[in-house]
Image 1: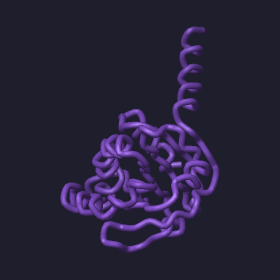
Image 2 (image 1 turned 45 degrees about the vertical axis):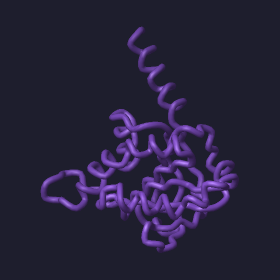
Image 3 (image 1 turned 60 degrees about the vertical axis):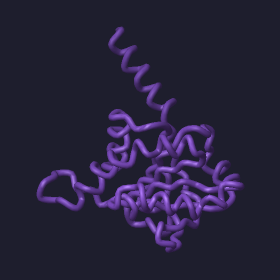
Length: 180
C-alpha cells in the first residue's frame, strides 16, 4: 500500500511542479544576435521547439544553467549522428526578454552575449524587446525569479512547461515530451 501511495504522490508532484498545456504559443517577434528578425512560433513550425525564457536578470542567470545541458542533449547529438543514437531534429532557443527600462540595455546585452557566450550557442540565442504584460498574461508567468522552459509541438502549440534551474530530472521530463 505504501508503494502505491508513494507513486501517487510522485504523479501528483509532477503535475504540480510543471505545467502542461495545449495552447498556441503567442506570436512574438524576436531578434537574433546578428539583428535578424524572426517571429515565433511561425519560424519554428514543422519541428518540435524548446524555448527557454527569462524576463528578469535573476531568471536569466538561472536560465544559463540550461544552456550546455540542452546543447549537448539536443543540438550536439544532431550534428554527430554516427556517434549518438538519439538524433533530435528540433529547434532550440534561449530568450532573455528586455522590457520597460531594461530595453535600453539591449544593445549592451547583445554585445555581452557575443563576447561571453559560447559561439556554438549564439545561433540559439534570441532577444525580445517590448511589452511583457501581453506574454505574462497569455503564458501565465508567475515566477519572476525563475526561467521558463517551454516545448512547442510542430504546430506551435505549447505541450509542456516547467520552471527553474536545470536538473537531471527536469531534463528527463523535457526529453520525454520531445520524444512523444
